[in-house]
Length: 141
Image (cartoon, rainbow, N blue to C red; front, side, top):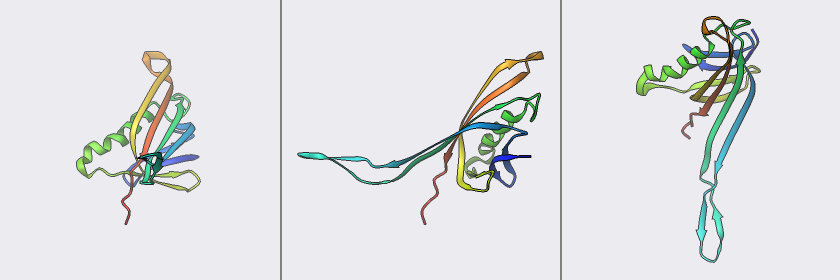
């Protein structure tokens, strides 16, 4: 199985792969905070106050009849819902690319699903997804 990316550690893991949910696009947005400080008779000055949000969005298509089955998006939701079961002890999950780069610890903040092609008994023949992940934000030591 060609793994494109893995989200998880130990018991809670989801693998984005050719045989499961293959994503076709990855978008990453990282922010750095430089708020403006107004000054009298001068242009505002900016002060660096730290890193801002780091988000990754994966967009993909699942063809359930071809590979992976119909339960891939349900499995993504289960990974996100694991935080509910763990209550306040919920933890972020490690995100690792298929070529071994550890991107850090992330949490699922959104999942959009579209079923543009429907087959017999209402079963989707094509499922599109957009999964949004946000960096957990490790404490500095």
